[in-house]
Amino acid sequence: MKKKLLSALLCVALVASMLVGCGGGSKEVATDAPATTETSSDSLEGTHVFMFKSTDNSFGDLMYEGFAEYMASKGEKTVNKSPSETTVAAQVQMLDELIAQKVASITISTNGDAGYDEVFKKAQDAGIPIVSVDSEANPAYRICHINQVETTDIGAYLVQAAVLIALGIDYPDEGPAMRYAVEKALASYTGEEIVLGVLSASIDTPVQNVWIAAMEEELTDACYAGKVSPTLDKKYGNDDLIESTTQAYAFVVENKVDCIIAPTTVGIAAAGQVLKTSDSDIMLTGLGLPSEMQSFMPATIEDDAFASVCPYMMLWDVIHLGATAGAATYAAINDGFTGDVGSTFEMDAFRDYEAETYEAYQSGEGTAILAGVPYVFYKDNMPEWINVL
Ligand code: RAM
Image 1 (cartoon, rainbow, N blue to C red):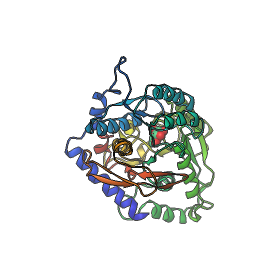
Image 2 (tube, rainbow, N blue to C red):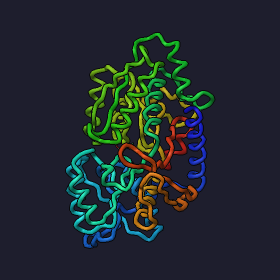
Image 3 (cartoon, protein in one colour):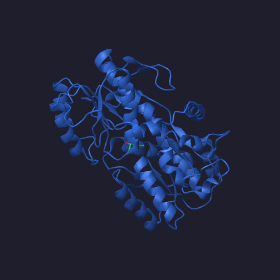
Image 4 (cartoon, rainbow, N blue to C red):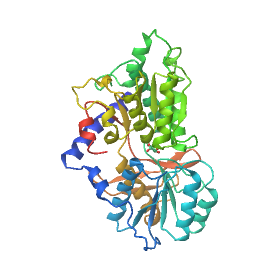
């Protein structure tokens, strides 16, 4: 694990310098890029659909940016069709309409495990392939899932980061990795039991729930016994700014947790704002976009990380994730990628990434491919990343 995190760090430095060095300020592209390639009179027949959990989520917009760019390089038409509400029902209704319009494929991040079977079956019967990305679709109907990073790594790293932050320890950027730092710090810790909170998306969101399960698994390790509560205090903001803000306030009022882990870019930004403007000692970490988190995090290497409510957090290259989903969908239609265990496809070079071959592996009752590694954002690299993601 130590090795993996270090290599992720090297990756951060490398990718950051590459992206910044070549002027890859993708945020600009995101602003300029149309959210959809259709006009109201255009038919969506033959268009590849990207459906995120809901609109107004920069994570989804950045993913679509990568998806659209990769597909365009193959001469394909795409559209970003996401509902305004983060619900299963809203996605199902939209899917129904899109299937009737004979779209070419559906690449989706789902809002729940259940409730999609009927509409997915309809897509399957119409020969429209389904690929899920970020939040899984039922294995019975998808070609494969595009897993952003190792689930167990994310769960473990988020807990380790939260514990270190609760103890006032800077991100161990050199030498020992987070797990080692956690073990060392907890071995001599004699204070009150540390309590961690989770501000998640919805109670049903598949991706957040697998990360939370991985956090709970990490907390069963002997190094936490008696020092960190094995029970996470969970609240759900439904990936809605207002609801997430309300839930973050509830953490402040209850004052029971030492650090909130928000495994959603919407939740972490809402909590950042609440904690920054409240008289609270609660700290924050989770999964966030550097551009959205900059006023709640240290800005330069000289800063005291603990003068900000979120000293460090994580994510991955969301634009590349969207492109990988596009590549898988394209390969499923054109290059014989079946999504079965062992089946492979080659993704063309994309921006600063070289061409790469991906292989499907067993994941639960379905298959997945692994798109990337987690990056840790902290005071040393925030200045580079806020212009990228
Ligand atoms: C949010 C979404 C998404 C999640 C990211 C980290 O934007 O909930 O599902 O993967 O955060």
